[in-house]
Length: 147
Image (cartoon, rainbow, N blue to C red):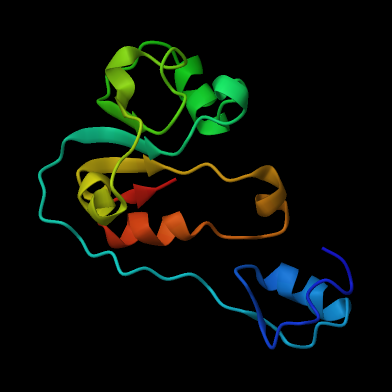
């Protein structure tokens, strides 16, 4: 992104107040902060998991991992029911944690709602700029705790 490549837009929305300020200082007076939202609702489901994570393992063949999952693995054998969905997790997490390569988006509220805690991992560059992951809103609206 530079001082000219967003000029063609009538309005620029950002999920980060500090990034909106940065855009405005670059001359984008049409930049506004618009926090995320969700259409998810609490699902009437029983508790199935203690911890859930939905997201692909990053990098070629999952080589780079995700910080929250690396930390979870570093704790050793855990007495919790853990479910992880996403591409490239096989062989990188205990088989008992693997929920599948994909979980349908329309049913995520049921998955999130059936877990006590839903882990969320954010790209470092996004976190540095103050962006909030929209997934946080989905998790909270589904009735789970986001961390």
